[in-house]
Image (cartoon, rainbow, N blue to C red; front, side):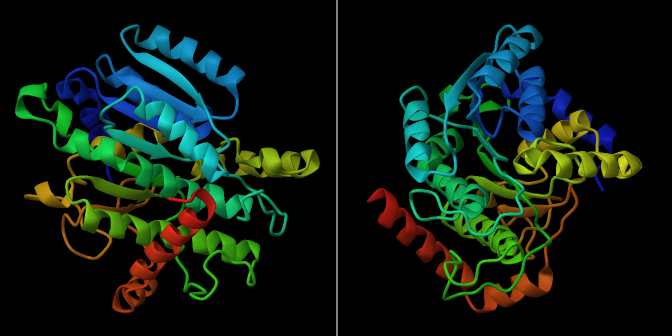
Amino acid sequence: MVSLETVRQNNSSLKGFGPNLVAVFVGGTSGIGEATARAFVRETESSRVYLVGRNETQASKIIEELRQINPDGQISFVKCEAARLHSVDEACKSIQEKEEKVNLLFMTAGMMTTKGRDETDEGLDKKLSLHYYSRARFAVNLLPQLSKAANANESDKQGLGSSLSRVVSVLSPGDEISLHLDDLDLKNHYSLRNCAGHAVTMNSLLMQELAAAHPETSFIHAYPGGVKTGLMREFHPITQLAINALTIFAKPWMVPLNESGERHLYASTSPQYPPQASADGNVAIGADGNTGSGAYLLSWDGSITGNKKVLEAARQNETGKLVWKHTMEIFTSICGN
């Protein structure tokens, strides 16, 4: 476990990166995404932040508050229906028109539902798309900007600054399962359990594939912990009331939202989770079991997690390459490139 003192020491040093860090928060208008964006704006110097989400009214309120926290920061809202890959492409294009580099891509967009398979107009299940495909699309689309941040010229660097290049997907590492390899998008084997397990496992495998292909950027799949967020909004009001009542009893084991934001900012910036190309010294063990591999599976407290048995079998069978191939095929069939 990483102590809260260590987390706060790291976060208080982030101004050492210098000005003009660029961060994109997908799902940044509520919950952990919003809390982490707040921590990022508070702890960085003249950063540029993009809140990607659906609720422009809520975003405007958050942006006004963030400008009070750090008047030198530049915060913008990018409207996006993240379950749709075409909307993801439009959001990325909007950011790319303004930014040559992106230092941090932080993704939390998701939902909780008791529905069965619920397809978008693109033919993907909405929940599986939010939890996996759209996140993969954001990462792939913004790789040129992440690479630019990783490879900034020495003359461009400020303090620690410019070399930060990181992707964080917050879902549920440790809950990986054996995949239906002939039905990764679950057209024929859909259940809520399979949907959750496929999204988690494919996130973990995607981080490893991306880290191997892009060794100057680090990739993290992080567990949120017990945090009260807005994911219950899809439930019936009576169900929401029941869950809210349960959270009262669970409060001693819950992670306060502000602390969660601080801890996820640590995961997003700490030198403990370096890219493969710059791993040196006492750093974290990567998702493949090797120190400093560039892909990390983190629990809510910064410790290493992951279903080792499932992930080892996936490595031996090169399942990650199959997931990558499938993901690219989905992108081509829906987006045409």
